[in-house]
Length: 108
Image 1 (cartoon, rainbow, N blue to C red):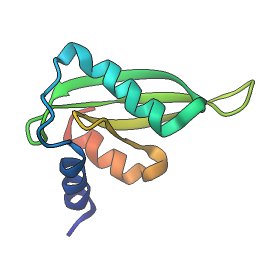
Image 2 (cartoon, helix red, strand yellow):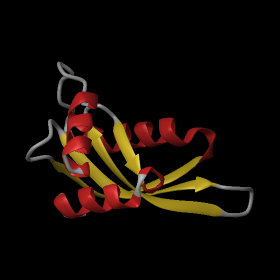
Image 3 (cartoon, one colour):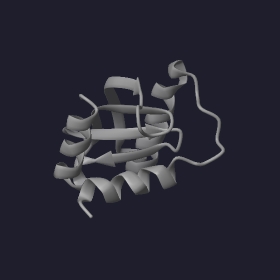
Image 4 (cartoon, rainbow, N blue to C red):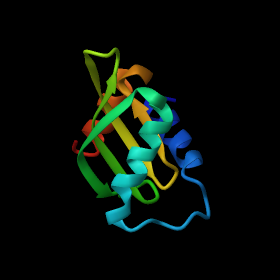
């Protein structure tokens, strides 16, 4: 199995079966919640470049950049890919090739 197949299976499991699909207007807030959960108190800002219905995953996909405060004077930015519902986010730190694969597949 390739990495994309395994990751897709994990995303489907994380998509909270039975959870109702959100309205597209609510997706940005849920992406922020997922990223804040991943980054904790270091979470600073989100730039969601694309939020769209997914053709093969339940709900919506989102991609963009997230910033965190690395120290008092500097900010660290990395790419993300998220699935809603499920509030599941993959960051560059999880594997930039995995983020590359999702960005390419969903046109980010």
